Amino acid sequence: MRMFKKIAYEQFIKDFSDDKELYDNYLLPRRSTIHAAAYDFFALNDYTLKPGEIKKIPTGVKVIMEPDDVLLLLDRSSMGFKYNVRFCNQVGVIDADYYDNEDNNGHMWICIQNEGNKDYIIKKGDKMCQGMFVKYLKTDDDDDTQFIKRKSEY
Image (cartoon, rainbow, N blue to C red; front, side, top):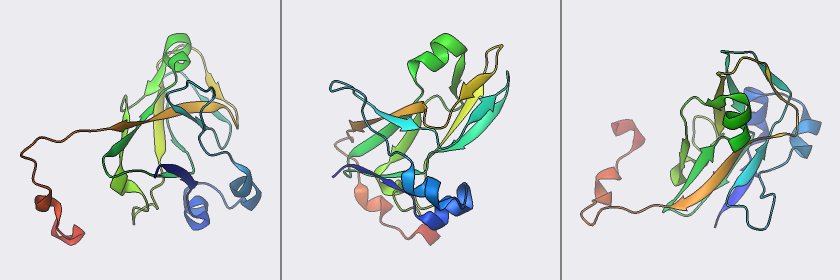
């Protein structure tokens, strides 16, 4: 199963706002065309990035996926081409076990930097990034049993 879900309302309050109407009405990621490979994520609020500024932006979204899936969070092509704005980490890698993470309910964020010479403006509801599901492979000698440790052992 692959599915985007809203983070819990309690997490939304902690990370963003106690605006219940916004929580009830914001859009989950979706594809814009029948042949789109990626799902568009929509801004929860208006944001302006000044030249040189870095901003961490909440998506309000968590994701359920197959154990051998990874979700890649990518900037939109126009961000770099037109505005010289990019993800600080270039590509976000979301693993299947990030869902319902005990520290943040699996809430995904993006961090972008304006390397251009003009303000970069994102309006509430604008497409702000995209997510692509990808199957990944493991080596033949990979030993999954090494990861069967309690979190407290790390």
